[in-house]
Amino acid sequence: MQKIAMIYICTWNYDVFWNDFYNSSEENFLPDCTKHYFVFTDSKNIISSENITVIHQEKEEWPHPTLKRFINILSLWKQLDHIDYIVFNNANIYYKEKIFFSEINMNDKKYFWVKYIPFLHKKNTDFPYDRNPLTSGKINIWEGYNYYTAAFFWGIKEDFLKLCTILNSWYEKDKINWIYPVWHDESYLNKYYFLNHKDIYIVWPEFWFPEFSYFNVKSPKVIFSSKEKHGGWKYLRNTWYVLNIKDIIVFKIHYYTKKIFIFFIRLFNVRKLVSIFFLKVLKKEDF
Image (cartoon, rainbow, N blue to C red; front, side, top):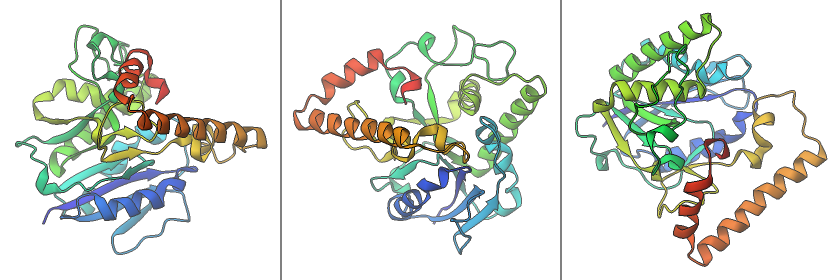
């Protein structure tokens, strides 16, 4: 039986997603494997147990919490001796359908990465790669194959740690120069993919699917919860940001409007038509 390290980072107010993530993972994600959770957090609501190791993580201003994920993972080096695979999970992920390790044939690849849904049918010139020649995440305008999410990816332990070592060195170099790639850790990951694409097992967006999506994926397995449900990214990234009544009303209106809209799309079976439309007009910032 394979042994899996589940990496989870949630500082500030992101611990609101923990219970949904943990319960869905225990039920649906790799039930034919042994999983251990390594949680980097400042929350007092998440407690260490037999299969959960909590590592205290101080709050930091964005984007450092996400850029430091690589050094966080490397700090676990000695605790990962018994581990076969490492899985990185975004804070707002939950597993909707069963995913068995025995059903995934990686064909001797080292990493498992998911295509980013808004860029499935676009040219590489439309990908939000970092084009700044001064950053370590830079990809030339004529280069690139696909665009991948940094929210959910995994790999063989030794190779995953190698990836983290390289990407953390890029971050440390850019930090000295006070220049960061446009999409932070995701820019680094896409640069790493470009350089090592033969080692990547690529999957489609049923493994990365927004809670309110206009795209046509029949049976999404991995869902990313809407941040609006919990006050939006400003509240989630900053404990000191206080939601007033107006904020709460606006977020609730956005949340339930999307929910109703998606319901009628599915009811009248116009999902494919709408998905084609949104592939044309949506940008990365919309997700």
